[in-house]
Length: 420
Image (cartoon, rainbow, N blue to C red; front, top):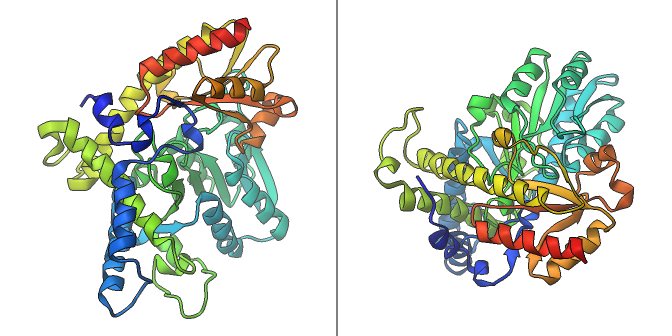
C-alpha cells in the first residue's frame, strides 16, 4: 500500500494554501470527512442525549457509532471501553480523581521526564492530595530515549500507577510500550499511557499492549478538538465515577459528564472514516477479507491505513534528519540514527547557534513554514535538556500529508537563517 500525496492532500481543505504545516504535533489539519460529519450532524440531528424524538435518536446512533469506531481504531474489546471528553488533559485529571480511591498515604506513583505535562502534573497533584510518593524515570540526554534502567529502579518502589507516553511530543521518541506495560504489571502497577503524539503516526492495539488506560486526542489525528480515553471494562466498571445523580451508571456514560461535544464526536467518527477511505483508496484488494492477525472489516482498514502512514513517515523522518543535520550551527535533539527510525515519529526539535528559538520560529513563519517553539508543555524534557531557561527548542513535526518538497523548502529557509 503506497500513498499518493496529491490525492491525500486534496482531502484536507486547509492544504490548498502555499504554506507548509510542520506544526502538526500541536494539532493536525482536519480531514474533509471530519468536517462534513460535523456539519451534517449540526444540520440534521443536533439534539441532546436520550430523547424520545427522531433527532435525539439519530444523534445517539452517531455517538454510539463513534464509540464503536474508536474501539476499532484502538482494538478495544468493546465500545463501552471508550470514553469521550473535552481533551486528554481534562480526561486525565478526571480519571485521577477516580483512581485516588485506590491510593493510600505513602503509596508511590511513577512518572517520566520524557512526557507531556498532561501525563505528569495530574499525577503530581494526585500524589500531593493523597500523601503519595513520586518515582521519576529519567531519559538519556544524548538520544532522548527512556532509560529502562531508571524505569526498573522506579518499579522497585512498587508504584500503584505507572504513567508514561507512547511517543514524545517534544523529541519524537517512541517508547517500548508493551515492554513497559509488562514490567509495570509484574511490579503490580496499573498503566496509564499517553498516546496523543503517537496516534496519527501508527496503529495502536490496546489488547496487544495489555494497557489498563490509554488516552489520545482526535485533533492530533485529523479530526476536531476532542479527547478519548480507553480503559479496560472491568477497571472502568469498578472505579467510582464522579457524576451528577441522574446520569447513567452504565459505561461509558458514567464517565462522560454533562452534555458532550456531540458535533465534535461526530467529527471523530469522520476522522476515522478518512482512514477507512485511505485504506480503500490505496489498499486495493488487500483491504478486503481477513488479515493475518484476525482483524476484520473496519479494524483491519484502520490498521492498514496507519501502517501505510507509518511506512511513509519513516522516509519523512529520514529526510528531516538529513536536512537538519546539513544546517550549519544546528543542534538536533533526539534520535538521529537512521537505522533506528522505527523508534521515533517525525517530530524533531533543534536549536540554532546564536539564535533564540522564538526568532527562528518567527523567521520560518514569515517564510510560510509553520513550526512551534518553547517547551510544548513537555516541561520536564526541556528542563532535563537544560534549555528551558533559554527559550526551549524549535519543533518541526511532519504528518503523512507533508511532502519531500516541503522538507527541502524547510532546509532552504533554515540555511538562509543560518547564513543571515
